[in-house]
Length: 412
Ligand SMILES: Cc1cc2nc3c(=O)[nH]c(=O)nc-3n(C[C@H](O)[C@H](O)[C@H](O)COP(=O)(O)OP(=O)(O)OC[C@H]3O[C@@H](n4cnc5c(N)ncnc54)[C@H](O)[C@@H]3O)c2cc1C
Image: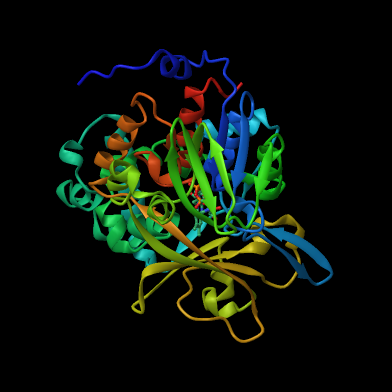
């Protein structure tokens, strides 16, 4: 199929347009913030966020603990430079420092005698990926792939599925449906051998720097609807206010778009409604019962299974990853807790939704990319769901970068 574009659109697409557009960005997770930051280089940007603070840092807290104050990112997000190429470029432009973090993962899914078999299969997997062996045709799922090429059960059930269920905070069943290509591509950029990093000053610094040049920010925004109004788009808020923009970038989860986008956008909604999500809970607390029973076997990240739920629980021993907490009594961040901490030991609770990547995801992402090429497009979509990849900060950032490039706003 051929696409024909208006001269104005071609200019936007080639980054040549001198027109200063009014652009609303809705959602201030990393995707929305990256779009707002880049678009502000040339255009007038207004940011809408439903939280009273910037979304990427909205659940982070100051932990007051034994005379110290530690800023804890909730959730604690780690990155590894081999995979997070666009994000590292953004952080470097913003002069955001990163540091290595001790992030060894210990899995309760394993028994010791199985470790040798797992290590053998890890090396076999990497060798096969690098030699281009073992076909990934027909969008084969990771479960089909591991079974077809005879990877051991300790490797799949005891290591790969639980590790990815923790990385994606999703159920083991959802991980099994992930396209093998997506998982192998994630693993093959050096994760196991080069270690992981986090931003030294936490996500607070990231959100401050990304939002610095945005013209206006509406916190606690309650958007009723987005409509077409001639050549413009309008945002109507619950308080009766209506504002007009040349373009709107939606940096909100795909499954929330139908809450605010009017039915005039039915073709966009048909695509966005196909992305599926799973819920997760993140607790900050000091209850040791949510860590492995034997303290000598605690790792910075501990994966613990239970027949009570199909999502592994991951307990991060914050004292090991947050230098200021070294030497103080244990503080934890637990993802998907199997049970509640004892009374008085819970510090905070936050709820999240994560996109699920399955065989359908490649079709949805391709459709989204295609509508972004349409003539006179004025509404755009970015977020961790909008790339054919594990839904992490890298996909959120790179989806926003590719939209911003259409407006002539690039990373330096
Ligand atoms: C427990 C957990 C651990 C994770 N660990 C890592 C990790 O180690 N490394 C990594 O790379 N990634 C990690 N992630 C994933 C990463 O956090 C996400 O991929 C990323 O934050 C997604 O960003 P986003 O901008 O696409 O979406 P979101 O962060 O979901 O941002 C969407 C924003 O839109 C706002 N919003 C929604 N609806 C509206 C509305 N109607 N009006 C206005 N605003 C609205 C929301 O409040 C939110 O601020 C983790 C996620 C979780 C839950």
